[in-house]
Image (tube, rainbow, N blue to C red; front, side, top):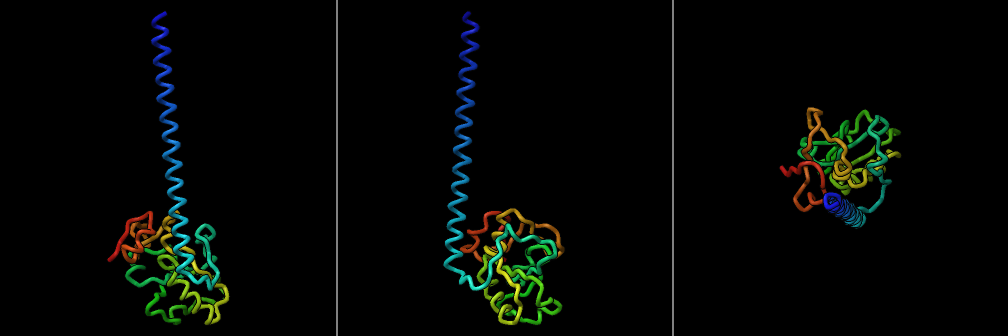
Length: 182
């Protein structure tokens, strides 16, 4: 009989240990989920105050890179060179020129992006003013794109983890990928 009691005690202790592990794992996952929710809310608050919401916004989840949209990158050339959304066309920001849109049908749906959405919103406004009726700003920019686990490519169209994070103060919003500032 003592052997059975020892066996039961061991099983009881193992069951308690497993239960404690499961509870702790659940709390850890819940805490990570809560932290991700807080980070997303903070990002949304920052974007809400930064953007004027003057053009339609495209959520990352709704953007399908399948040829239905022309993707325009409104970051600087050095940022685009580090990485960009596959198939994107660089148009720049500081030295933006409408001639970079040669060959793009004005009726084609266009999504413009930058790091977080500010510069792309300004370029999208210019496109609207120039008669492009189907222009959207990618909400959250390339940071949101990468944070959702989507691929970016380098200048050789090879997948890369590198993302130009613009500056350390803006780089805090990039949660995935490898931050590059050069």
